[in-house]
Length: 286
Image 1 (tube, one colour):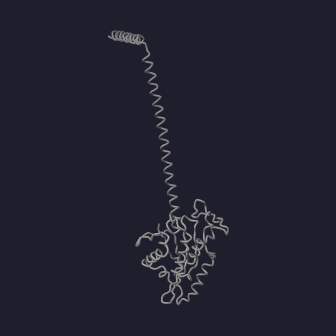
Image 2: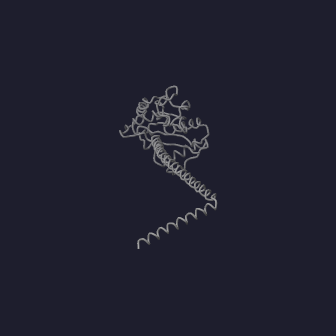
């Protein structure tokens, strides 16, 4: 079983609102946990029956962007964020699906580690989801870093390079993962994570491929049925032929030998009569 950490940049304010909306489930459940999404049953990536297990902070989605602006203002940055700067950074924590430990304690300790690592003052939203295939926790941060007492808005430094990310995984393993019997991923691994959009797209593609494959299977089964039907008709006709042959054979075997001799004698007499008439006609023609 492995620990799971996935870090990504949220590029725009609109993207931040979309991610916060997904995390909050505002458009999925009402206040009582009833499903209001209108999503077809076959396309649901969540389980409404487990909605009551979710642990999501109560910050409305519309206030997440406002909160970001407040965090930036309170940071007293010497330089404002650039227009093309990432709006936020999302960190997702989970574990292998077969993890059978205490998820609540795992997430509680993870949250403490993350707030210390990324700054509690930078935290915008926390959402723990139990209504999907594997429990996981989303945390949204404003990417503000501090060096030598100077704060700076930089998603690049907040996330860091490959070495920094590897160190994050190692530190998380030593502080949290190991205590819960989880392993750290292989150092230097090139494995990557799928976003919800990528997963949904792949799922839709697989469904289409399955539909196409099912069509091929049905075509094959129909061809087999047609072949078996023709084979059965052929076997029936062959059986009828052999039955007729057997009946003729039985009739022949049942004929009396004397009758057969009489038939042969009659045929011979007919032949002699024919020869006489032919000879007579040939004599008259001379």
